[in-house]
Length: 151
Image (cartoon, rainbow, N blue to C red; front, side):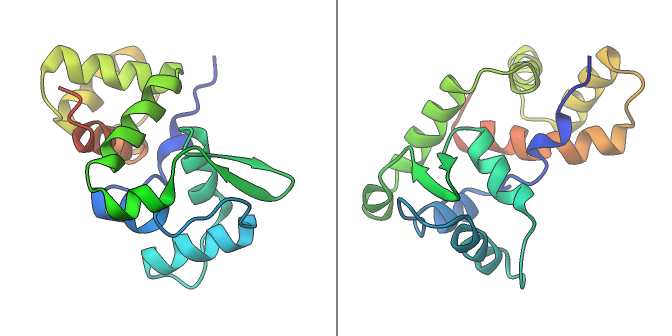
């Protein structure tokens, strides 16, 4: 079975990066406007669609007809600091897929957000994958679990 590990490689790695991106988004923004927001936060001229699609994949917004539809309230996000953790936690609860479930299980088993332990756990199940690739692909997921205080 082909795993979609790289589907999460472009997620933000820090809480302030999530907050900066998500607080600037608006319902019915075009995907190009969303990409511009992400690029600005990342300090880049432009970003590939992967950044946007990774955020959509975990359920922060839906994309229909070239526009985004938020699954959270951006105005509340700007006003209430704890709201970000609530939004991200709810997204992960709704986002059930094997890759995230596996990372969650290894983090829970080790009771630690230790990337090396997670990579080693993944390597046991997928010996054909390179450790460096596994680390690059799942680092944002491990960091997301840390942001929401998963343990």
